Amino acid sequence: MAFDAIETPFGKVDKIVGGSGIYVAYAAANFTTPIQQISIIGYDFPQSELDELVSRGVQLEGVEVVSDKKSFFWSGRYHEDMNSRDTLVTDLNVLADFNPKVPDSYQGAEFLMLGNLSPDIQLSVINQLTVRPKLIVMDTMNFWMDIALDGLKEVLKKVDVLMVNDAEARQLSGEYSLVKAAKKIMEMGPAFLIIKKGEHGALLFHQSHVFFAPALPLEDVFDPTGAGDTFAGGFIGHIAKTKDISFNNMKTAIVVGSAMASFCVEKFGSNRLKEITKADINIRIAEFVQLVNFEIDLI
Amino acid sequence: MAFDAIETPFGKVDKIVGGSGIYVAYAAANFTTPIQQISIIGYDFPQSELDELVSRGVQLEGVEVVSDKKSFFWSGRYHEDMNSRDTLVTDLNVLADFNPKVPDSYQGAEFLMLGNLSPDIQLSVINQLTVRPKLIVMDTMNFWMDIALDGLKEVLKKVDVLMVNDAEARQLSGEYSLVKAAKKIMEMGPAFLIIKKGEHGALLFHQSHVFFAPALPLEDVFDPTGAGDTFAGGFIGHIAKTKDISFNNMKTAIVVGSAMASFCVEKFGSNRLKEITKADINIRIAEFVQLVNFEIDLI
Image (tube, rainbow over all chains, first blue to last red; front, side, top):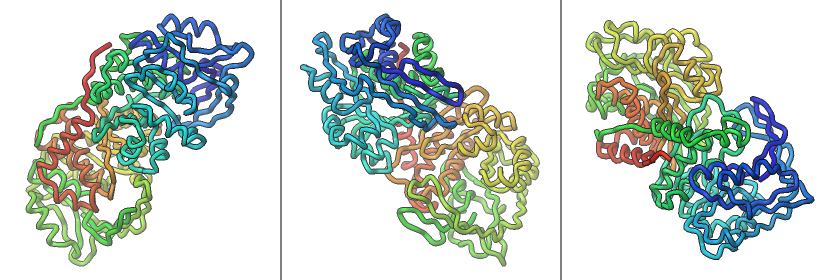
């Protein structure tokens, strides 16, 4: 839970609420509650945002508030194609000494979504849980592969689902072919691998099975910030709602995640996620069904 | 119909039969016959290849044989990622003065696939047909946008379906968003637009409708040469077999085209296309169904 300053070809915002946990929570809360949040914020984090989260069923007992430090701050600028960006500022602030504590009231959680953070912090949360969740999903990024690969591999052994993008899958496995990359990564621990390809959709691998979900073709991508986290939130939200961790239900969860991500990019930050209703989500899901639905006979 | 010399990270071949018409014919002949081919070859084109085509139901009356010139020759080398290539040699040979003549026996053809060639040649074929086909499909590429844009736009006014890749759709429309690009291109003439995205699949646009078909995730892409032409052959083959030019049936045709293209890249040139049986095609199509099939309820 943090602040972002974002510049895209369509405009800029100076300081808005962001961070992986924000997007995951707003997306998942459409499908299941309570969401039991673990994060750290500074004195500058707005009470109104916390109230909004609570009103949507997000519990904040696991969110540490540091009274004499600022919240994490990231600033970035997207290039014309929206597929690449430059980081302008990273102020760790409270995140520098984040030592997450899982509240007793969170014990027994059946589904754990580990947002993109240092592998040490992800591992600490897993180890504090007295009962192993039915499903542990992990997001990560190339930054942690560069500076904390050993720790990352430790976490990989303890999770069920890994989410990375295509470049990260290639970096982690040393394989260019995503099919080969998936095999190698699943040998590192996770039984399921989701490879996110941005505007080109997402792949789900499990044993010898593969499933593909497209991204919705959009007229404009206004701001991609948080799209991957929103995807993760929709994914875990659907799984937690249905309590079904089969490959078949994960396919559905990926379509739900893609639908949620397609909203996220329509406005700056999490603004669009806060506007949408269940009716909006149903319309969007129906568009995904139309997008890939076909009938075919054998020849 | 031509010769190619191809170098990929997996190996090289000095001189094998290739060319858009070869791939389209071999792919389409699995679905419908006769295929009435229009092309030009030199004295060096192997009789065995012509016999093979005829045995599969490809008619060659429209293929001009020039007794004192060589066939078109292209040589290229693919980069490590297989998504880009360098052209090493282009010998036009017989293609320099190709003036296609549509045989009387071809008149009345219901479906016309215009392979990637100069817009003048494509237009000449359209204009020679005494009865307008039920469906005219056009392939083209950035090269013709660079040197013959006016001619290309003339052909666009006369075709029903245009096939281009994503970079070409952006170049032709001047729009980065593929949704916006599609709208502009459909205003230029074709009621349907197919945007091929290689390993990222293909999009079909028509009015306000959009359909997406993925490419099959493959362990290795051995040689991408001809994949786009094979896609076109599978597409037009399915349409010609079913004689159904609705948007719904085009969705199916795109899946068929994607399945055929997934075979093409498994070996050099058209080698794999010559091996496969209808049973192989059915297995591959079933894999595509599995790849995108999901069940979802509204929330």
